[in-house]
Length: 345
Image (cartoon, rainbow, N blue to C red; front, side):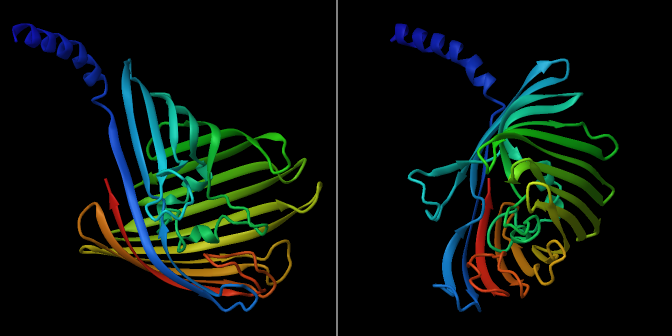
């Protein structure tokens, strides 16, 4: 018995440093699922309505850091998608990589490599009501060009640098080597500058995607976001200009905008946005409009019951934009409502 106790003591002594090294590991995640029902007035589709359960960016992750001395830290994060509804079609519980990285953080800022949201996308997060996920988000319209390509993305194979925040000012740069739609390897880049202090938020972001539509021509997006918080309320405005290649030497453009509002009272939060995509390349009635309403009730700091309604209408000369159902005819309108539950841990 004495020998066994000595062996356990020795094993514990050797194991202790390993446990200490992992004491800074944080396990986190979010489960967000809703039931929803959508319908469209289009008569040119096989299904004019759909009722389903939808996963809204549910995730599971671990992250941590190690103090390397002199103000320098090694940082890391591994985050995976998780679909509680099973609608993702994956054979296992984890069906994709979300924000994941390894890097260094110090007085110089933060630099890392991995798979991460673009600065262009993150610039809008302050005024985003639906976590950039699900059927009710303004990301169904704002950030989507006339060709159906979205800039509400995270980028793989990326190197990012974040400046330190100085008096509320900060910036982010992302470079990624990707295989374009034309099967060539190109460098995409996304940059943003931000101010966030005293209830005022402002961001200017730009993204460049070579060969997205035509070889030798880049599609681009420029976004300006502003928000003002006063008491329990927030008002936000987003304006963006998207250019899309129409040929190897020409591009067309469109202007999109969104007005957002949010108000907290007691355990409840009310939110709404109106978004509009402008005509593409001067062709009349090629844009779309979308309005969403959101109500949330917080049972606790981690658990929220929420309800939402949305209406998305394509202009009479387009059928590009959708929330859930494919718009089979020009000018199709789609509407839906949902009830969801989310828990953060």
